[in-house]
Length: 114
Image (cartoon, rainbow, N blue to C red; front, side, top):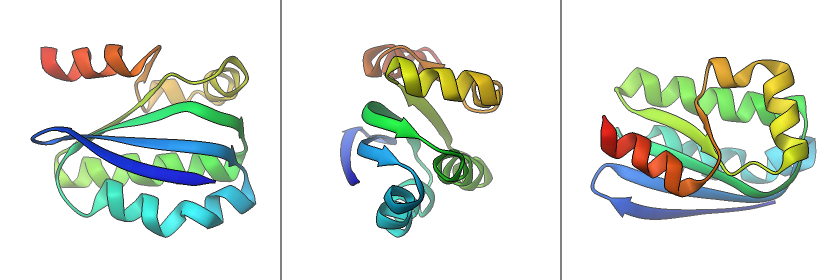
């Protein structure tokens, strides 16, 4: 599992995940992902376009980041999930807790509109 962070603008970052967000993938990125998403007040777009599998432990990782950022006054949104990953997110009802956008551009536009 790989994780990268890119500053899009002041107060908005994109975190790109790549690989399987299962138990091994979550362990591999947990500390780095948490540092990127919860240590400062920012809005975060999590790009899921390169995530091929999502397990419940991966959902926990995403939820922890969203709660941590919300506590700082920022927001986490998910973007560009592959169909199999999107189905898991929708089935689990995560879209009711963390906004899910079809693309990174749509997520970025949603932040710009607020």
